[in-house]
Length: 187
Image (cartoon, rainbow, N blue to C red; front, side, top):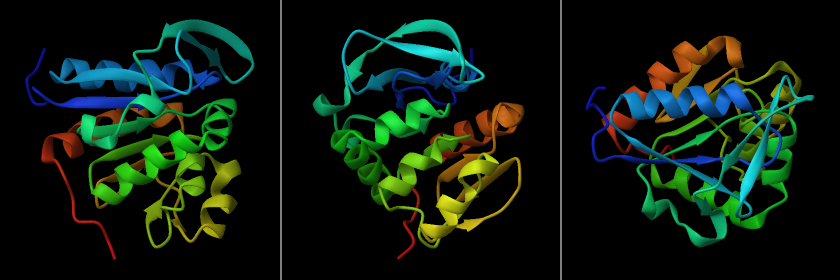
């Protein structure tokens, strides 16, 4: 286990319907680099993860409810995908405000696959270079983002990727950005 992220706390914001591999693999990358990852959700108890959006996978215990935390409690944020997960998050004002607070603070934020949908709801992609799963790229463009088709895109600490096939690049880049710390927020 490395110590690159020693002392760093990372929130993984997810709800029922999260794509399991997009929750598990970034969490593992953070922990292997010496960081502490906490699962934050819209409710207490457990969330139901999915495989390929339609096959129930494992259930994961929630560490903290989003209504009880602040971006000040963490050094970085990760938004996994799955189509149902970000849809649930977008409908929760506390989750949307949590995401907005992170992006506006300059702390690193990683979003993969459908995860950037929550960034759209928080109105924080305007003028930012991003990528995502193909089906939500129009939403990102309509929200003012510059959308590209690359495995991992970084814009002032905002890291985005297209989907599970990009997890190795996404994980490496989010660990690097967390290690760097806060970034300048574009005006």
